[in-house]
Length: 256
Image 1: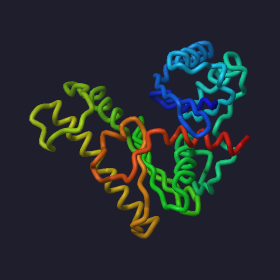
Image 2: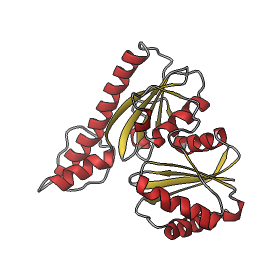
Image 3: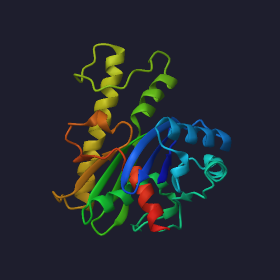
């Protein structure tokens, strides 16, 4: 079985695959720092989900938090006796990356793109990842990664208001019933939700117009922790919660 891990700025998201099937998923804050903390956590979460750590024979990782990479690698070697694969610059991806500097593209965005082109071959694709940041990735039917857009994520927007103003509170992130809030809490919820929704619609429209000449067959995929918040809003075609983990898995297979 393969243990796949996505190390983000806020959370560590992981899963265990038996061939193509994902058997379990887990999420943890990114505050873990030492190799022993990583190793104990990973073994514990597997056991708690009735998955023996001894069955893991491959580990694949993408990380956007470089300061955690050494500890995570050491944990894999010490607690699993496995040298993990890291999705990073120089490895095979199956993509033609058109970024001016390909080294700038986050490994999580590359993982999403890999999974997107494998799952939906020969399609023009826009991937929206609703995580700490809300990111857009644009991939052509020819597997060309053209770039995308980045804006503050939903939680980041709420925290920015709370941390940088004297009287605005931190609020629960929910889909509001109406745009006009009748309290400070409702007003923040409205501004954040409909603000992100509007930004997504504008970016999708512009990306299709600039990159795909408004082609109707362009697929819009959504993933990330807050993607389900925007379900049934008409901005994406498919919600794919495990897209990044599938990309991490595919990258490991390409580089065996």
